Length: 316
Image (cartoon, rainbow, N blue to C red; front, side):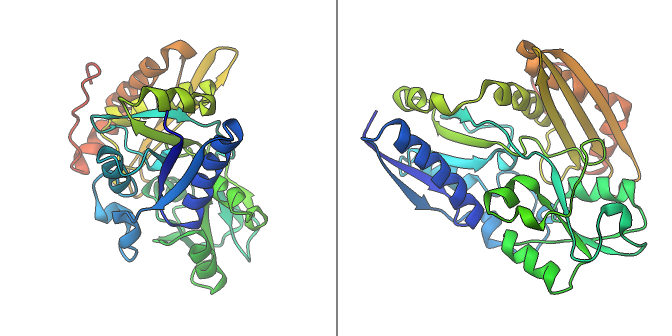
């Protein structure tokens, strides 16, 4: 492995925290390494006045980083795993998935102690269709408004009175030292997280065997197994930010439990399933969960959204 590594990262405070976390881990593991960051602007960073679901497509926060990997400008890219599409471009691979912490969605409000305390007609901000659908399913009396920007920008909009409450990822608030702003952690049975939420993904070139080996110490096998099931599910339903889905895997005593939903954007329909099996069958569990939800009614929701199923992992 070469002794000078360049990590590609977005410029947001959260992305820089994540890239520096990996850089410091590499330096501690091998003090002879020189690690530098290269800041890269993605499409999702450029378009801040349009809801993510309306921008459409996949890889809004990752495509530019992946292109720099492919052209050799950077050696590895650090992503929030929840931002990474299920399909990795040819020539690239995930070298490591870090241990997952703080997986919940967080309710943040200056006036109300919990989601249930919000009065009818209250305005709650989120940029995620997944969150919007589950919020409206639980509280159809609320107004869910779009919320874009980095964590501090979103908190400032709340503090300026534009919203009665907002929903942010617990992990991001902890990483930025803003956990004190969390009013309530939303339970998973009410708000299933996004695919890979709380974990970091380290992406490299597939043919760089020495670097993949050097990064292996950062891989957490339990999180990798759980998120393999989650990402298989996402691939099976051709999911993106345009599809309100949530999926969350947990591992205990060698058994993997996968909780999954496909929802209508307005929350009027939510199809939910729990799928279990051996941790060694994580991909099959993700596939089975997708088949179950598609048959239960998810296929109709996806068709209404114009989503075409192209998964090649088995019959859907």
